[in-house]
Length: 163
Length: 169
Image (cartoon, rainbow over all chains, first blue to last red; front, side, top):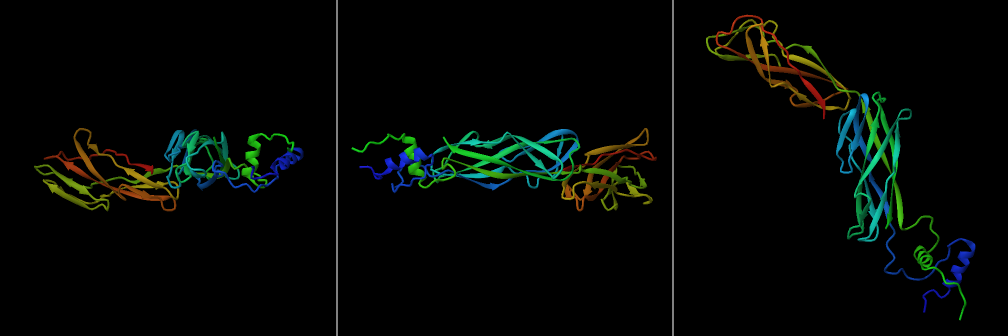
């Protein structure tokens, strides 16, 4: 016998109204996965950078290693870090990762583009036996040859979903 | 038997899991992280004083003159010191990012010449040594070295050059 004998009527009403606002006293079944939750641990840092007269890039890998190319040179490594997130949910389930294509850092006037986001794990990950998994994110910063000397900041979103 | 529409299983499951209406799906989540970078001035180095061993007297055997970063001279072997006038450690001024730490690269050796005869200058030392930090965006480096004097080295005025490199690290 169903645990919720009136569910059929409640669902029929929900379909009619377009809202799924019915509650049910059914206990959670073993196969309902723990809700997936994503939390930020620390931010992405490119550190101190010298604009060398020609356009260039600075890349921070998802492992936290920094390198420069073109007319851009590296300054102090203080603050260099891949971003870190913790995914929490049902142990051993896999999840997909969605990164942005690009975001903008600004100092209130000048801007720089950040793109080519990478992550570890890449594409998808698996929650550990305790139901958590760390995701680290790197990206590439585009610096003009005459980039204004200042501190720049911005944000980016990471999305995870059970798959 | 009550007549009711068959409800798709996925919808029933969603309602059972969701309980009361929730704005977000429990199967996915998003979070926003910050990203930052600082554009700083390039590191630059300029010479403010040349390295000068002063007057040196060559003996019948080889020897050396050691010039410290504090411009103090000492000799070994067959070489003796002459007039100290003009003796100086090299000095460089470094500028750049106020929080910048940097490494100092010295040459292994250089040759000074009177146009015909040569002497080798090596064992370059600096103060600070190895690496340092730009306090308020500036730093000063003093450089000493060792002059290798040949037996009966021909008297004359010997000159040459050497490079010092600083790199953010």
